[in-house]
Image 1 (cartoon, rainbow, N blue to C red):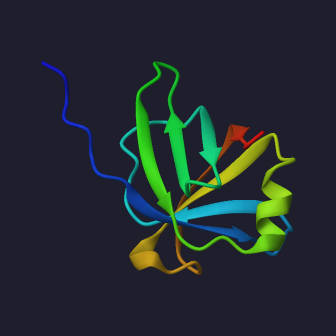
Image 2 (cartoon, rainbow, N blue to C red):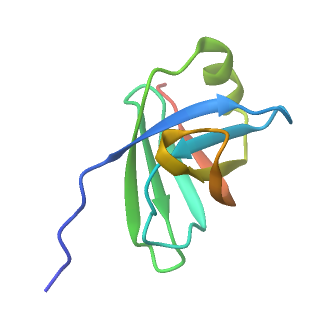
Length: 103
């Protein structure tokens, strides 16, 4: 029997102090991220492990500066934070990034 798909959790896309694009999210993903696919227009980020299990994240408002930057990125920093507090990181992971864009 297939596991039920979890509803998307909320994520925030930021530029951190090291000028890296990072996704902040609150709960454990339940998988070890290997790569991610983002669709900025739809506000969705999908994270996959080596066995192609996925976890969906719903992006909150994305600033134009970050939007323009993410289109050229090849990797992304995923940061799990405690109580949605960016100053309390729990776990960080780099993942390869695929960007979906409209033609």
